[in-house]
Image (cartoon, rainbow, N blue to C red; front, side, top):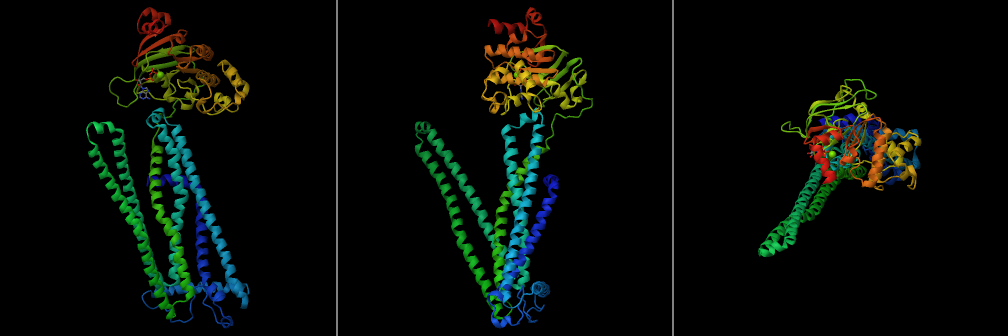
Length: 632
Ligand SMILES: Nc1ncnc2c1ncn2[C@@H]1O[C@H](COP(=O)(O)OP(=O)(O)O)[C@@H](O)[C@H]1O
Ligand SMILES: [Mg+2]
């Protein structure tokens, strides 16, 4: 039911399309009824008419109502119903007669009237089929497009923890294939269901109006027939499925036997394997035979049932025509409607499977949409425009899993950065450096303790505001398949090219960008694959420069470079840090020597802190790292 509410929320915006579709279906039903009704005058006035009839014998009209009162008298088992349907028929006949009179149709001109009307009615019916189908699709496609947009919005706003739990493949299939299946189901199948059910009722009504006894008989036969069809269909599906399973067993055995051939030989197990294989092929054979049995049996059974049904229908019709209780025209109408019922039945039969799948898909989509971000944006402090004093990590602990026991990834971190200070983080790989800097833009929230900017807990700041204060160059540079210019300006199309070029120049990227075929308009390929690692990082640095944020985070921004380009990127980085408060993680100690302060992290705790000289003198962890790099 939650799912229904979920859909209704989206459907609200497309109510007008839905109503249009409903109106069109209503007109369609009326046109269909009129179409069937016109068949009788087609016979009586056009095809079977002889001269003397034209002289003035009144014709039966739409339903082929005879004027003999006995014939349509309301007696017998279906008496009241027959009375009612007779009224309906004569009303329709009156309507038809009125129309003829209106247009002044008589004599030989009668030949034109019914066929022309028929053409008009069929045109109207086709038009309505188009209008209803299109408007329903419009609503369905609108709903699923909105769902897809919201889903993407939801996913992209989720925390890093969410993205870590859900693989990109999983999220991709939610947004792309699940929503597509939903789209197919909602836009097309739902319409089929609605239309088919409506039409089945309309056809049923027409049949009853045409001839009650005949209708009751066939309306019992039709579901029986439908049930038979459905049974065969279902049996086929089950059996096919089982046959596929057996085939999978077989393939598994086959690969084992062939790949593991040497083991089979070594143990002298050839015969054993062959017998296993024969058992499996026998299972497959049985499953296949069952499938063949059903499929070859189905059409004879269905055909003979249909033949018996048809014979019964023709015999009873013949008897009634002899008794004068039925006209040939009516019987023909009746057959026509029965045939027309086939299409909706066929559609309904197919619908179930698609619908089941769609329900599963929408459940998955809905589940993702229900996940709340664990990074809540509930600001209690006013936004700040820049950094005044500094950043403080106050007894911060963190763990990736919510166990809460043992020693976490970070524990008891106390660290202060004054405004304008460049602090370097060093430590072995896995010490927690990246984790520590990721707390600042709230990619994750600490388990305990707090991170403060100018003595305000960052959780109190608006998330957008907080992140606008921070420029980041990450370990893996993320570039988009777009022009160099748009990659640097990322999302700010209004920036003049001069500004973009200035940032690029400061990142030592201008030269190589200008050397590319279309300069700043060159598309750099997916993930920047047309660029070298150093060029990619310089683009990322230019992007961070252009953001011009007061706080800077560099996470091993030079780790993938060879020494030569590192010198260039290094210079770019010094440009970047100018006048900013920066947290720099560097693999190579040459990068960090120039920092104001160096913090050594070991297994989640700060173990040393000081300037390069101080730490060397201390002769602790930093000295060991330093020695390893320069003298190891
Ligand atoms: N997304 C993650 N999920 C779970 N554990 C992680 C994740 N990222 C890092 N870790 C673990 O946290 C510890 C610190 O990692 P990290 O901060 O990346 O170290 P560093 O950047 O110093 O190399 C490591 O033990 C690592 O295995
Ligand atoms: Mg790292």
